[in-house]
Length: 235
Picture 1 (spheres, rainbow, N blue to C red):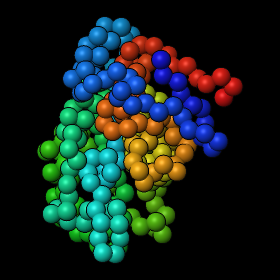
Picture 2: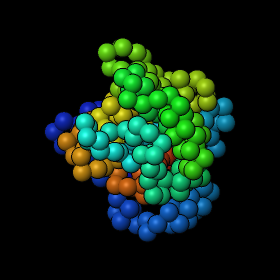
Picture 3: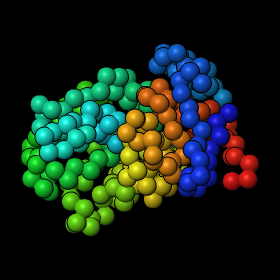
């Protein structure tokens, strides 16, 4: 059974869930789990949906190195590469009963390093190739102090209103501290998408390796299998 840390993590790391630890061999085995556990799931209210909010770059699309910056958002459609397995990942999120909604900061619009038409072309392709349900974008620079730029929760809250989402039953998946803070500020559970570049990040609810690790966390949610996670003793 999954264990979930409460509050901020400062002195240690939450439990790490890998595909091997969950005995998932592939996305096919996750589909088998879904079929087996669906019969156990309690009837849930249909009045509100639930969502997995996804950071774009680093989770669904490859980060890019430019002469003036490393590991940043792609600036042109030519540099926009959707990661292998992203389509299947999004499909499995939907099969588990969640909307797949992208939440992304794109300050290149504000600083002029990216054209709006290029961003639109990238997102048209992302929708077509992965099947995500919606994409919310913050185009502002940090200095503009908007309400939507992560770590502020504005994009998640806008999605809640547009799609009638129950945030308490939803997840935020990202590879950076801004994603984790945005999720916490919005009241959703947070999953850090583990990369070599983010080993120093804390304050998340779950740490997952790859798409299968993320799906393993979601598949063990009480909303999917009808059970309750335990908390760490003393926390």
